[in-house]
Amino acid sequence: EKEKCAELKLPNNYFLYVGRLAEIKNVEHALEATALLKQSGKAIPLVVVGYGPALEKMRSIAEKLKLGWCDHTSPKNSTSSTALVHYYGFRNTRDLRLFYANATALLVPSWIEPWGLVVNEAMASGVPCIVSAKAGVSNDLVIDPRNGADQATGFIVNPSIPQESAAAMNALCNTPELRNRLATNARNKVNEFGLDRFADSYARLLETLAKN
Image (cartoon, rainbow, N blue to C red; front, side):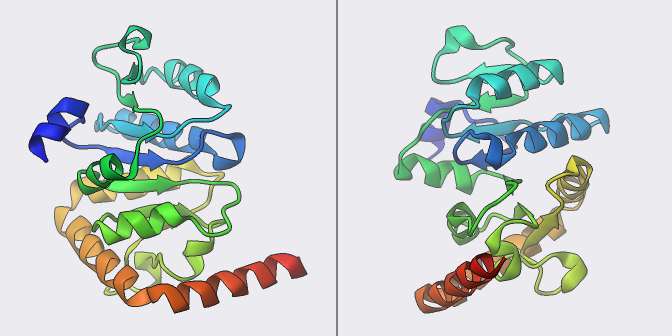
């Protein structure tokens, strides 16, 4: 695993986004939260895995925020050797396990997200998640410390307010025991959730969306 991480040139400590690069996914929120964290004195990389029509816009925003952009799919497109945003493009399931396993937390800031299967994947790897209140998982899988500190599995944030994600990221950086507790709870929660419960929750979600 260490050899593969070295081959991928993964940072030692990072936050993670996995998904399509599209406006509805609100990746700009993750970039802004990373910039806010940097302003607070913590220059923690953001690893981006995925592809989509908003790729060039995301690269431009990263540059405007002075985060830099390290493109691991095409090194010639990297703009800085000290970049905080590391872009890896599309990755297969085998590689994704490494990205999850070494992440401090997964960011899911979508404007709309019926469920968010990447959260299941991350939690199964023992990774806390910082998710949008618009994601279906915020109703079942992800429990915010404000709603139950002992059972908390991650943070639920307003997708319009990157400061909330930055605060959650800061808390995870400052308090390793918090991150460890959330990681353990996350793995236990997703393991007990099960396929049948997932199907029931997803059906309830679709019913709610249909009514609205």
